[in-house]
Amino acid sequence: MSKKLEEINPWEVSGNLNYEKLIKKFGVSPLKELPSVFNENILFRRKIIFAHRDIQRILETIKAKKPFVMMTGLMPTGKFHIGHMIIAQQMVFYQKLGAKIYIAVADLEAYNARGQSLEESKRIALEEYIPNYIALGFKLSNCEIYFQSERSKDGKKASAYYRLQNLLARHVTFNEFRAVYGEITPGKMLSALLQASDMLHPQLKEFEGKIPVLVPVGIDQDPHLRLARDISKRIKGFTQLSSTYNIFASGLGGGKMSASDSSSYIALTDSEKEVEKKIKKYAFSGGRATLKEHQEKGGNPDIDVSFQYLKFFFEPNDEKLKEIEEKYRKGEMLTGKLKEYTIKKINNFLKSHQKRLSKAKKQVKKYLK
Ligand code: TRP
Image (cartoon, rainbow, N blue to C red; front, top):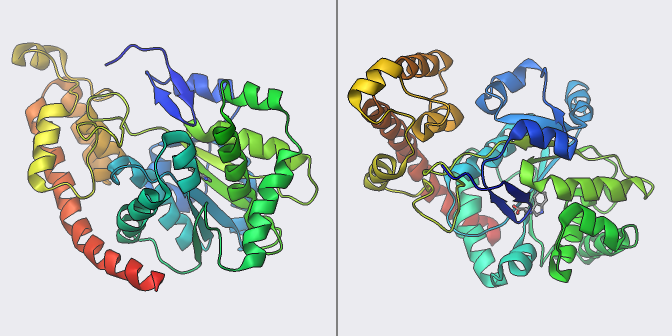
């Protein structure tokens, strides 16, 4: 695994991340006890979602059966891979709890930060991301899906969203931008303000009116939340944003899962053969160099990518997971067996997912008409 210094900002994540340190560095709070519905979800139960800001407000809202919004955005670059499932599964979870879901397709951000055309972003969002959300259980009701470059056909709504971005600008200084982001270009600055508007605009009267908003993100996005929270405190009329933070699913090689490197991820459209090849060839193993050593000293599931994928996504049964972990740690289970099991689990999931996906694509086409 790489020993590079960690680099983490909304546009770049690299190196080995120390999440304990990040909690302190960013000033977020560790996620402690949650109501039992949360623990039915493995992301919460297994502490993959590990930190938060102001989650209490959302928990109270859920308890009181009052409305709330879950807001998220997607940067539509590359293929939809298993790492993207972490946010998608939360969309499904909160939608079932009654939240209205707002999804911003960050096409302007993809243009400013990655140089990707608006057309390409639109294509990837509609062909890859949205259908995969639906196949994972997301419903096209009680939701708003929009493009940053095209908020709404309703002029009043569109104006309100872009107006907010501009009004926010007056309440932040260049030094604050520097402090939060370091080096920053005008394009990225506009993206940060637009993302603040993404997160805050559901509360405008043109949308839901005053309402609690929850933004679940990867920890790299926290600077955007800090900025939006700081600015909104300076303007009257906003309920403070709540957010939760997930750790990243590791890439196949143990580093970052990157949409631009197909040997770093499992895509939800990968074939059985591809999954088999990727896990066998690329999945970083916590096993020992020789059979003898493995049997004597045992493997390390904490750094084993196959085991991590079972834990994050593919083995919902806690007892089974624990059994695998123990056997692997003791050296009773070999890497080959662990990989074989993981391949089987992933392929079982993908088989039914891909069936749902082709139906979902048709649904998106209808929705757009
Ligand atoms: N910046 C996010 C990303 O890189 C995308 C995004 C845009 C977003 N607007 C948002 C995320 C609002 C959460 C909330 O993926």
